[in-house]
Amino acid sequence: MAINKKKAEKILGVKEAEGRESIRKAYRCLAKKHHPDAGGKKEDFELLQIAMDTLLDEDKEPGQPVQDFMKAFQQAVTGCNPTRDDLIKRTRDVLCKKINGLQQQIEANRKAIANSELIISRLTCKRPNDPVKVMLENAAASSKQVIKQLEGMIESMQGALEIADAYEYRTDPPQDTTTLSIAAFMDQFDGYFNTTA
Image 1 (cartoon, helix red, strand yellow):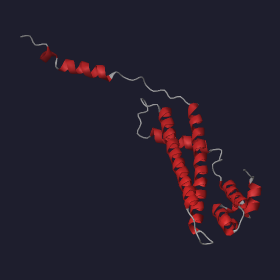
Image 2 (cartoon, rainbow, N blue to C red):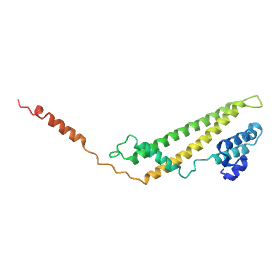
Image 3 (cartoon, rainbow, N blue to C red):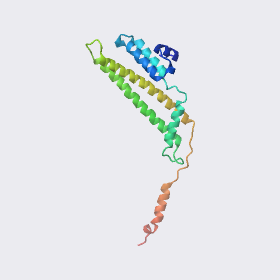
Image 4 (cartoon, one colour):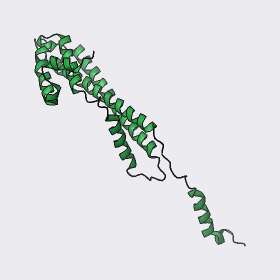
């Protein structure tokens, strides 16, 4: 479920302009009160999470794919030979490597969520408050938020790949250094190999 920023501000009781720390503080305060283990409704708690995600969402910055492309291009330029190395291919390689790393992080977080849920399903507590369950639920919620951020970063990197598609890089034709090296070698030892007995 998606909500707009005005509704998110109303739910959390804080304006987006007040900053990230104020948003997080408001969320934490309300989350303690509305958490299902504290007697709150699960739907209300989930709505708080959505509201916080909406206000903290940085992944929708329009210039982020451009910034990601520029960073990858700068990395591609480092240590390259501009006459022989295709800088756009190197840029794409940098972006693809980053996307792969982000996908691995997403998979690790999904496994952490699955493990938390499995442990919760097998765990019983005779106390009225179950701090272990709360900890595991919070860890799973945190992993879900991390996944959302990582997915936004992947989306931005894919936008950077689309920017790379608009470029071509011309390199010098490769020189046949193998032929030159063999010819030079043969010239150097010409008398040695052509001896007559």
